[in-house]
Amino acid sequence: MYFRLLLLAGLASLPLLGTAQTTPTAPHYYVGLGASVLTSAPFQRYSTPAIYSPTLTAGGQLSPRWALQLGIGLGWQHAGYTLSDPNGAPSTIYSSTTQDRFLSVPVLARYTFTAPTARWRVDALGGLMLVHTASHTIYTVHYTNGREDEGTDTRYSDNTYSLSLGPAVRYALTPRVELTANALVNAALNRGYYDSFSDRLFLNALVGAHYTFGAN
Image (cartoon, rainbow, N blue to C red; front, side):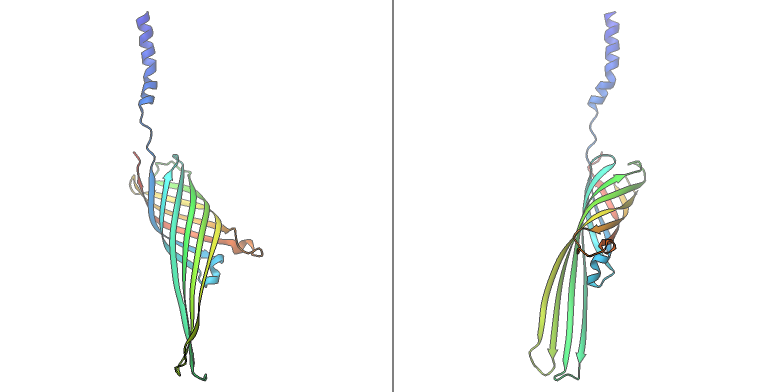
């Protein structure tokens, strides 16, 4: 009688013992490389419809469906012009060169709607983005009669803080490598008081690849 009770108790404890001995799933992280484009209203003062930049991404999986990631993108552009006035006294050449740099830093949460192990994965991204802009303009007036040149050297910088939300898709090439694409709609939080809501909106699209490490 006692032997049978001990045997039944031992059999009943096997599932619990197996659960206790199961190794917890190791957390995993990912890094990525890609290309992004910023476009629309907040950057119209830089006379450019779009800003292209290489990007780096680093993130960590918090659960099978939730992840948190940080991105860094750096874009730049160069513009200039030269005008001459041969009828001036003396004749004069005007020139201007401008260098703009754009640093974007999105901090995003990612929620996966599809099965985390599916080859195609559909996500929602949401969070905050900082775009830092720095502009350097050199304006020169050159006189052809040897008179000393005149000019100005102007520097300007600005930060745009925005809320970001948009869809993303991923395609798993291997268990560790996946192709990614996302499109974020951003609403600037610190534009002028009289700016309309549409003037605060801009887009951020990215394509790239992620490599996952640390997972079982």
